[in-house]
Image (tube, rainbow, N blue to C red; front, side):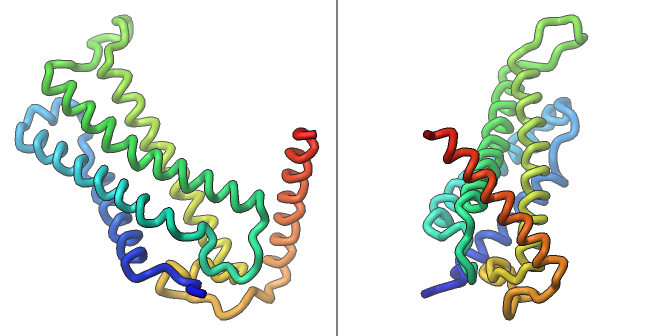
Length: 201
């Protein structure tokens, strides 16, 4: 049984990170910058490529188990929590370029932000707020994802090694502190499962 992602999956994963980081650092800081037609066209092309890659990435990666490489059975609560985080990340990665394209389209049609806070909110204001909120949420989800990956590596679950080419795990950790934290984590999952199971009755 294959306990590691394919080379293509790893390439897709890490190249997307580079694309995402590039999108952050080259982002437009002020709407007025879009007056530069070349920049506007570039933003539209970049957002379109980003959206296509996200969709292709999701279509390909969904065939793999969320905890591919795990040596031990994963608690059902942990599984659904991780799945929810992954789906939320993909939702953000899709909404980011979509709202970016909407901003470019609205700006091309002459829409701008309000001159003063007293004026009624325009559709451009709404899309800009949504774009910013989605970007902030994506940052938080990525931080959570990275923290979870590092924690999994410390536990030696094997999931890290299925995607990351360095610091591979040989076996589950023998560290008493990590094992104690992991034990508490499993108890929390048990309580969550019991809570939801009792509510269904």
